[in-house]
Structure formats: C-alpha cells, structure tokens
Amino acid sequence: MSPNRTRREVLALTGAAGIAALAGCGGDGGDGGDGGDTPAETEGDGGDGGDTPAETEGDGGDGGTQLSWHAGGTGGTYFPLSNEFKTVVEDNTDYSLNVQSTGASVENVGSLASGDADFALIQNDIAYFAKNGTGIDTFQDNAIDNLMGVATLYPETITVVTLADTDITELSDLSGATINTGDLGSGTQVNALQILEAVGISDFEEQNTGFSQAADQLRNGDIDAAFVVGGWPVGAIEDLASTNDVEIVPIEGDNREAVKDAASWFANDTIPGGTYSGVDSDVETVAVQAMIATHSGVSEDVVETVTSAIFDNTDDLTIKTDFITADSAQDGMSIELHPGAAAYFDA
Image (cartoon, rainbow, N blue to C red; front, top):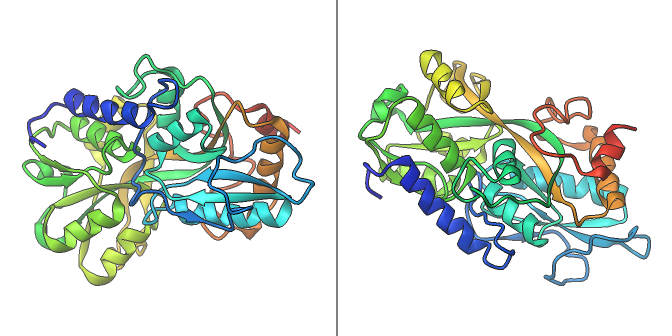
C-alpha cells in the first residue's frame, strides 16, 4: 500500500472489504475486527455438532440451546475471555456457547447483522459507527439497525509496539516507517489510522495482519512497528517480549491530547510497568472500550439469562477481573441496550 495514500482512500478500501464480506446480510456492511489472527477457529463442544447459526429462542430446558459467540484473534484478549464466558454460561445455564475466532469488531458486527452470531465482542467506537451509519466508510449511510448492546467490559488499550533496536521511542519516529496497523477493515486499523492522522504522520508504509502475524513480522524485521488494540497483557506481545527486547511507544502529552480531540471515544490509559518483559516503567497511551453486543433477533429471555450468568459469576473469571463488574457494565455504552440486558441491569 502506498505510504502516501490518504486516510479516506484507505478507509474506502476498508469499506469495500467490509461490504463484500456482508454481501449476504442485506447490505448492512462490515468486516475485519480489532486484530483477528486467522479465519474462524471454533472452540467448544458445538452442542449437537452442527455448524448452523444458533437458535435464539427457547429456555434451553430440553437439554440446552446452542448460542454462537464471535470473539477475535487467538493472539488478543477477546478469544480467551470469550472462552471464560463460555465456561461460566455453560456452568450456570442450559445454554452452550460456540466460540469462534474471528477478525473481531467490524467482522463481528457483520455476523450480528446477518444473525450468524448471537453475541460478539466489539469495540464501543465501532458499535457507535455501525449503529449510526457513520464514522468509517464501511458503515457510512449503511446503519446496522439490529445491533444492540449488552455490557461494556474493560479498556481496549492502544499499544504501539516495536523492537528496541529500531530506535523508535515516540510517535514522531514512525514517520517513514513500515507499520502494521492491524487486519484490513479491523477496529485496530481504524484506530491506528485515526491516531496517525491526529498526530500528523502521513508518510508510512502500511501492512495489514492480525496480532500474531504482526509479532512475527517484527521478529523478522519486516516491519518497524505495529498497532495492537486489546486489554493488556496481549498474548502476542507477551510472546514477542519473551524472545526479543521490545519497546512500547507512548501516546502522551500533546500527542495524547491531539488524539482525544480528534476522536471523543479515546480515553487516557496506562500500561503498567512490568506488564511485558523488559518494559519496567509505566507507558501512557489511550484506549477505547470492549463490549458485548447482540442483535434484536435474540430473545429477551436469552440475553437476560446469559447476561445474568456472566455478571453474577464474575468471581469465576481470571481475565480483566479489575474491570468486569455489573456496576461498571454500562460505562461507555455507545448504543441502545437490548431489552434483555436492560432487564438484568435495571433489576
């Protein structure tokens, strides 16, 4: 991709990819995600062994009803967290969750729009864009009307990672660099391009893969830096830091203010020192918010039951436990709440 391609041109390509991926969804458009690594990999018992979309009605009292849950790449946070949700839901309800690895946010919106997923993890900014038909070309004037919120979960930290020997220590050093901005059409790519534009960096060569492939590219010297969006610690960065000296590039000071001024959904965040091997000091950055979403075709009873299972049993989770609580589950909610989720949180 040309380093001089404008952000609008890049997002136009993103939109084309997303709309193509949703060709069977009535034109409701979307693709990509927040850093998916591979085409879908299915985890879990799969209920009756079928691959069809999950049923969304019924009380599951006849032995259980399979629900489809779309996560993200195996190198990020969405996938392992979704499998913890799977365990909690299956231990406390008659439902089974079929968790799939996907390209995450934008792709997951498409799966919800089509009914191929009953629940999915997405970024709150992508949810807003999709519901309101704005923000990125994928959704421009192409609103996903059936998209509904369930709960927000934790900050999705923007991590700009490089190797220590690149001498990239601040955002301005990315000018002229080869940068992996995340999967084409992903929430990561959207955020990366917003940040680069906000701080005035337009001269760069763009690469597009998921987190694990980006880590391999850094190891091999194929790229200079990568954007990763996910709750820390991100597995792919942990693995990279175990074999290489990594540098986390801060988004701080005037740069951070410029990013927040350019997009209101960004908030201050800090990656604590010691999160990654060799990175001993806190690193200031920004974050969006991870959330659970569903669609209007899923019954109120199903959504309330699944929501209750998760938030009544947060002590059984091991990932992001400082953030995932019923009290904070509507912080940053950017779209209309599903009636089933409202019934739980308003109870």
